[in-house]
Image (cartoon, rainbow, N blue to C red; front, side, top):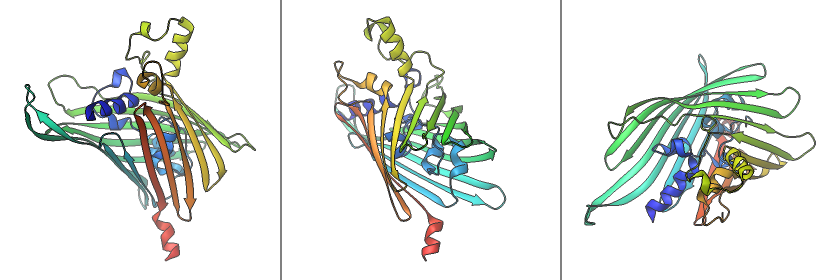
Length: 330
């Protein structure tokens, strides 16, 4: 059952062309992104966790910002994420992040089923990011080290992200574009050719004037035409429905209801997740996500829940603050 639950999570994170190790590279970084569908690259308003999705947003983050996230997945799988942003005198601002996904302890058996012991599996990612703003544009880059281990075996990669943000003058409208996870493999499990999980993502976020809503729509797996795990003939007997389904499998949508700076509600939808994880043509809520933000003095607290399958979903708990704010209090 532990293996089955882990597979459900991995399926929700990637398309067919990217279904292999290093699933933490494609997981949602923080509660806000998870609540909005998991692929938002256009939010640039001081949320530090967003830089792991697009380094171009770092120009909106204040020095001293720190954020922590905890995600209890299925069957004893746990995710931990942390990030920090600091402005240095000579080189300017740098962001640092670490992501650790613990798959737990597994029973090791022989071919005949005899128990031989136990083994563990985990993913680790370390990120350093920087951005530079020129007018309405902000460009950023992330340098990432990723390691994946299972039962004493492991592999590692050095990867990079190149992202940008455009802010439309006079309106609350941003466009984000990121070339994600390009790089090279250092070590791998076998002598085969392990590929990096490269992706191109683009999105936009807009808050219409005099409306308490911010809308975000994102496209991902742009370099892949088909992201079906099943045969196309199994998806739909209608050609028009099949074309629409293929298109929507590259899209996530999300909305934030902004009551005030200290209270927000979020909802999102990921069509690929729903289509690949539904059971007998019933989604049981798969693909939908929701969350909220509450700000209390120096702290921003975010919670979200993303439904993956009829078996349930995953919660995300994110806490962000600024360590420089405590100097004023003290």
